[in-house]
Amino acid sequence: MNRSDTSNVLFSARLAATEREPWRQALREAAPEFKWWCVDDADLPRLSIAAAVVANPAPGALAGLPQLRLVQSLWAGVEKLLADSTLPPDVPLARMVDPVMSRAMAETAAWAVLALQRGFFTYASQQRAGEWRQHAQRRAGEIRVLVLGLGEMGRAVATRLLTQGYRVDAWRSGVAPAPALSGAAVYAGADALAGLLPAADVVVNLLPLTPATRGLLGADFFAALPAGASVVNLARGAHVVDVDLLAALDRGHLQHAVLDVFNLEPLPADHPYWRHPRVTVLPHVAALTDARSAAAVVAANLRALRDGLPLAHLVDRRRGY
Image 1 (cartoon, rainbow, N blue to C red):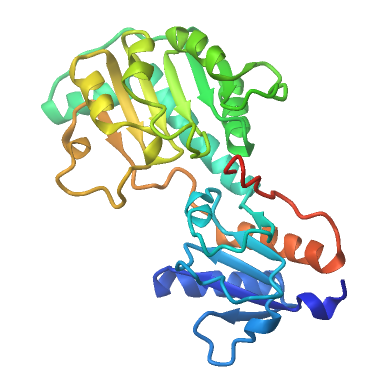
Image 2 (image 1 turned 90 degrees about the vertical axis):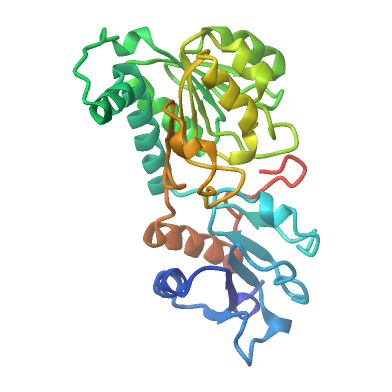
């Protein structure tokens, strides 16, 4: 494969103009040796586009590109791309794995677990009610955190929580043995999860969304947790069965839920989560993609494609991540 084969790159993103233009600039600055095109360019050379860098592309946007050799997502999750029946089935698909993004996710998870450990969400409610009342203060070493998902972000989160003194178990949905994680007990498979839930004070979800994990956090899952446990969902809204979570919170079985992702986004104004006293809502900001660092990740994969080197962070379409 020579350089001329891979010089044309398509940027396809359904983003507001205020978001799209900074991305275009960052990508061009990170990889200036490539020719960058947009889907609405009148002279778009569809017959010679070798790579597509995408963020929520319109369905069918990648059809009719016979020389396409790589689809690089700007997002970590690729379930929407995989749901597009027009996505070329034989073209490698790479997801975004950015160390800066992983660190940001670890920061959010650490904040949420600390706030739950120390009762800071309770104190925030007391402030709104004008109530001065102290509660017993638990040590980090008395809190067992179960991290679901052992990708780059899951491992970063587990590592950060370990450094803060929490007892950490980590679980992945696949049956293959999970890679070791220093300081944490690591498990795999549904049978192992059933044994972990009764001991988890806090569950932090960072699983990929697949048919096997959709709706995993439902009534049976919540019932298996000990009374007073909390849930932090930083992965995908479809992992959670909303009515089941609300029921577990309403009856007092769960203490609190920190939710960054939802089945429908933006979260509708009339959704119960907004006003629930045991729910903290974040507007999908646990780890925003940083255009500067993500553009460097994209540039590295484009150069690997150009030079015939292995591509990074390829998606296994059968597994969905």
